[in-house]
Length: 152
Image (cartoon, rainbow, N blue to C red):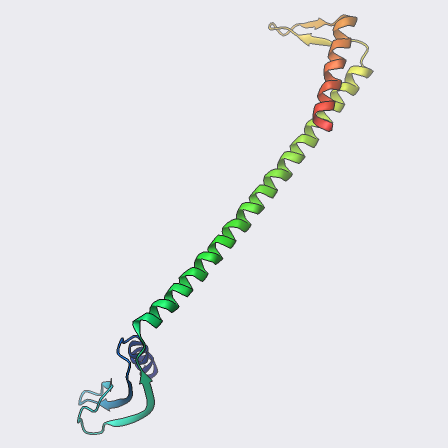
């Protein structure tokens, strides 16, 4: 507990704006509370601590705060760029995988068109309408074009 109070006092002393050096004094009041002061209080049992402090200028604190803020902004920007780059890479991979899947689908369709003896389409009523030779050749040509588009 005493160390926490001492650290708090020293931190507060470091943030003062005057440029002076001083010593720390400690005393315990009648209720047993420990007090730390930057000048003698005249209380009985007061001890001069072996600690000295010096105030800091507000310009130095401001400059340090600015440097820290600039560093944190640069760090956040780097993290953001890294995240953006990862997202772009993931999107590119997904597009490549989707394109490869579409390519495989088109190749399988062409293979089925080449192996089938008869091709058909279903009409609006769900009935099969068989394709003639010209329509089969056209369907195969379209499948080959789709392969050229997606597999190259």
